[in-house]
Every structure is written in C-alpha cells, then in structure tokens.
Amino acid sequence: MDIIRNDTKIDFMGRRKIALLFSAVLILVSIGSLVTRGLEFGLDFTGGTLIEVNYPEAPDLGDVRGALDLAGYTDYTVQTFGTSRDIVVRLPADQAAEAGADISTQVLDALSESAAGIEMRRVEFVGPQVGEELAEQGGLAMLYALAGILLYVSFRFQWRFAVGAVAALVHDVLIVVGMISLFRINFDLTVVAALLAVVGYSLNDTIVVYDRLRENFRIKRKGTAIELTNLSINQMLSRTVMTSMTTLLVLIALFYFGGEIIHAFAYTLIVGVIVGTYSSIFVASNAAILLGVSKQDLMPVVKEGEDQPDTEVLPARFRNN
Image (cartoon, rainbow, N blue to C red; front, side):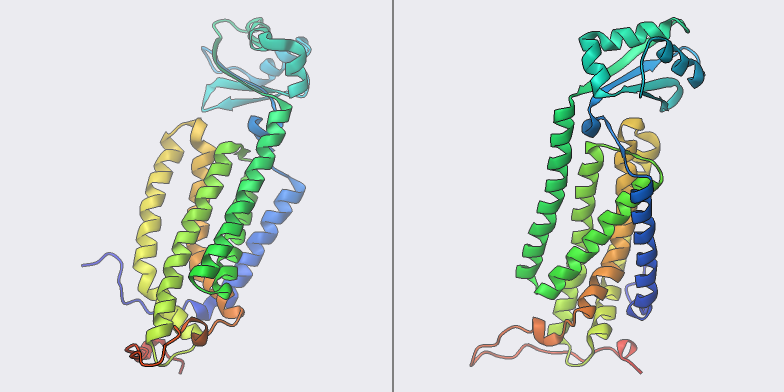
C-alpha cells in the first residue's frame, strides 16, 4: 500500500486566493523584520575578528564583558556557541586593525584575568574591504541566478511560465531572508550558499509541475487552465511530498546534530525547502494563470502533413461543475 496516494483530488487552485493572502502576509512580515531588525551579518560581511574560547565551567557573560571592558575593548559582541562553556567574542575591524596580529592573545590574556583554564579554540579574521566584496559578490550571484532562470524557463517553456517561476523564487528568497532576520540567525557566506541551494530546489519542483502541465495542455481536449493545473499538481503531488520529506529529514538531523558551525546553513535550507514546496504548488502555477497562460501558448506547431498528437478527455473529477 502506498504511503501517499497517486490519485489525489485536491482542489489546489480553488484555494489560490487564500494562498495568495497567506503569501502576502508572510512577505509583509519578512519586509517588516528586514526594515526594523535588519540582518545579523556575520564576520564574512562586516569584517573583524572572531575569537572562540572554551571555559572549564560555564562563565557568566556579564563577567566576560566586564573583563573586555577593563581591557579597553568596545563595540564587541559576546555570546555562547554550542555549549554554555564555549564563548565567541566578535571585535569590529577597526579595533582588530589597531591591536594587530596579537589581538587573539590579548583577548585571551584579558579573559584569563577573571577565570583560569581558558583555552583558545579558533580565530578568524576578515578585513572590511574583503567583507564588502563578499557582500557584493553574494548579491550579484543571486541576481545572476534569477536572470539565468528567467532566460532558461522562457526558452524551455513560455514567457508566462518564466515570470511565474521567477516570481516564486523571489517569493521564496524574500520569505527565507525575512525568517533569518526575524529569528536573528547569523547571516554569513554559508547562508548565501544555502539561499542559492533553495533557489535550485524550488526551481526543480516548479519545473516538474510545469512540465506535467505542458504535457496535459497538449494531450487533453477539454479543460480550462485552472482545471489542468489542478490535475498536474495532483499527478506530481506524491513525488513532491516524498522529495521534500526525505530532504527535510536530512536537514533536521544536520540542524540538531551538525553543530553550531552549520546551524545557520541547515536552518536556511529547512525554511527554504518548506517554502519552496509551497510555492511550487501555489505561487508558480497561480502566477502563470494570472498572466493568462492558455493551451494555445504551449501547443506545438504542427507542420503540414504531420499526424496530430493523440488527445485525452480530462477526467471528470477535475472538470468544473
């Protein structure tokens, strides 16, 4: 017995207005968070020095900040990393430049005055110029990906589908970035990589639905665009759900057991897979319908003397009453 039925009859497009409202709410929340809270940019973009130290016992963060204040450091951030005994200190690029290459040793000495047995775990340094270049290149990578997708889908299908696919991808990226801002997830290069992976994952789901929709447009004699879209989504639903579920199982394991280093990466992909699956069903297809896609747009040009393709009648369950 199949876990997921292949003969589902869910009227997805009948709920497209509710889905549109839901997407609008998520986008507004995302934009509001980005405007009011912004992003917690990581060291990759801001520049500066990251120092991770391990304490024998969980320290009081107030004592850690007090030791740094006495040493003359300002505008730093202190937070736990993974466990309560692991502490990360981030210093801005200007202070790191003033202190020179020995800044990690100076910070360790300052912290050791208030606690014994502290061990240095890692030190990372990124210059401010490098951080700006990384931010610029990351943004350009996202724009190039969207432009390439627009051209590919226009060539592979039709321009209405291309606009629908790009609308779904912008929808996904905006919501995922909004959730990163809302929950104060550290935004670094691993998150940019995860966002590009989300774009690819969401596009793959969308292309699968579009390909089945194009096939149904060509072989069904009857049925409106909405009816054929419903049929196509239902035909691909088992594949879509099973792919998303198996992917999420891996990502959830990475999120909980992969450690703090890939925490933001796994979180971004988890949100992206959920939102991408939703958008491939409700957003991409809905956008194509709103743009007026029809059978004529996808029917192949038949040359004189060629046989007409076989056609089928739309199943009764997908016809309008």
